[in-house]
Image (cartoon, rainbow, N blue to C red; front, side):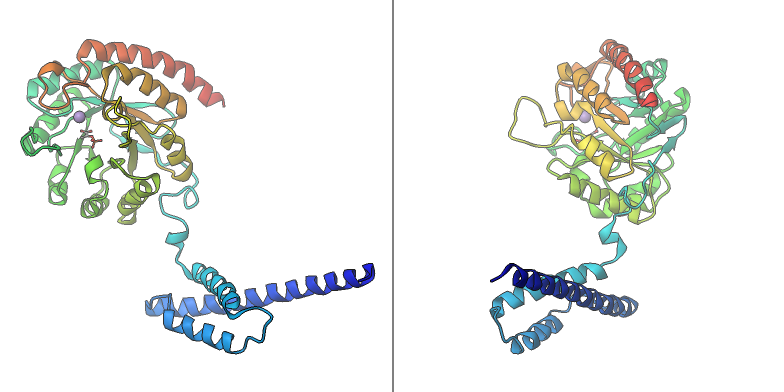
Length: 364
Ligand code: PEP
Ligand code: MN
């Protein structure tokens, strides 16, 4: 074959490529029109019978040199791409995604602002045990300028024989303390039926790790006008976590704080493995604020401060940790809550780092 012949064949090939391109796009436009009709009629877009029929017709006309199986493969790819073209916008871009909303979601909770570039702290006991216990922590929290107090009233415990929380009485205690110390309170709700009632007592609804895929709870939290702190499930992937948040926002409530609290791995040195890289990934992929719970992720008092430092350095919007006046007698998580002197040391140290990082953040 001469060089000229080769050139000619190449030109011919380029020409065929462009014709194929035109044909594929012409087909895509027809697919879009069909998609519009189907969406008005609420008919399922994927129609396997119709697809089989099209393949059969194509194969019946195949005179080679491609084998039937190759032709079938190529056309199935074209069908698949067309189907994706018909998929609704939600599948392409979730409501929680940056693609859908590039600007950060900023959540105001009384005096606290989560997601505006500053760091908010959520501190308080694992469980609400008594008025005095919560008030002692609230008093310490208040002196540090912290605005968000936590405390569990409904406790999802691994064992049914462990302390299950004070329930509504616990919420009443939280509300009383919050009013007295002018703090906002966060507490976990485990039953969709309790959400309405809880609105009178708490400022943020926490959905715990064990309930991250309790879809009825997510939907119920999505239907109220109250911020939600959603924790990552024990074995949830980042994608599952994001989809759990999507459940809430799809029902109308966009005020969601994501909270990385460690995931279950083979490592036994810590209670869970803090997946620190989830923080920037979640911040890149969603517009929601991201917090890090250093207590449940590490399960170790000696790691609370270094984990919190890592969280700040990697760009978390807030840090959650548990504080109890006397952890040794706490009814839950006694091994990892800070006592009040330790809490003050923790705040001294973390504030030093915050002051070094945050001005730099503003400049950058
Ligand atoms: C909690 O924060 O009280 C709690 C139970 O945490 P998690 O759901 O992350 O285990
Ligand atoms: Mn706890």
